[in-house]
Image (cartoon, rainbow, N blue to C red):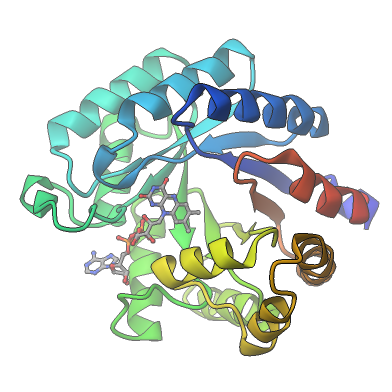
Length: 282
Ligand code: FAD
């Protein structure tokens, strides 16, 4: 397993902190995680550009630290000019990898009218039109399907559109059902989608937070897992230890089954990700 894993892409996702304390946490986490020499760190971009400046600040700090960085960029709620301005900025500071997304609008803002690009495939097209082959473009994939998808097949067809527009690889929404991922890969293969599709891994540290996230983004916590985690009540140590066991087993299955890497949703904390990393002997 060790040798195979050297060919795979491992990456860590961060979010831009809001406070000084948050900034200290981020720096501490990055300090510990960078020792693992991931392919890149990615930095999220808040709905409708709500973290625009903070995302820039975090990206620029990472670049100063000479860390390979992939900013996320979402197009909904933004004009074409604004997107082009951001792309020019990233090009100028040496970014070579982007996570291109549609994003979601902050609820109740009515920002939809501001969008020139309605879906991620249009953002990928725009990036490739302006900067042909100059960025490695990651897009999002949903092994359990996007919550707004009218059908599984339609979601796959739209995923294919993003790949046809020039996406180089994909990162999935997190999931705890390895079979959903392998089925998704089979369907992609049938559609001649041949880019690497890297599973997104969410460590389990806090059930309430995980349940809230999962409800918001449509990621499924299987009933048996939800019940087990609920059963631990406020015992965070028990949740972490059981959660780590489940996620380590999931990662083992994914890697053994041929996943081309793992992308960890670190939530700006090193330990939960490192516990999994060490258990996998990556
Ligand atoms: P799309 O690929 O555009 O798909 C969205 C929906 O529209 C799907 O139901 C799809 O079937 C459908 N669709 C796609 N193309 C078309 C089309 N051409 N015509 C009609 N329908 C279409 N959100 C953030 O706000 N900030 C982040 O930093 C962020 N990072 C993320 C990272 C990863 C790895 C993942 C998996 C998700 C991330 N998200 C982020 C969440 C993401 O923005 C949401 O899931 C959003 O609802 C969809 O974005 P998308 O790029 O997948 O959209």
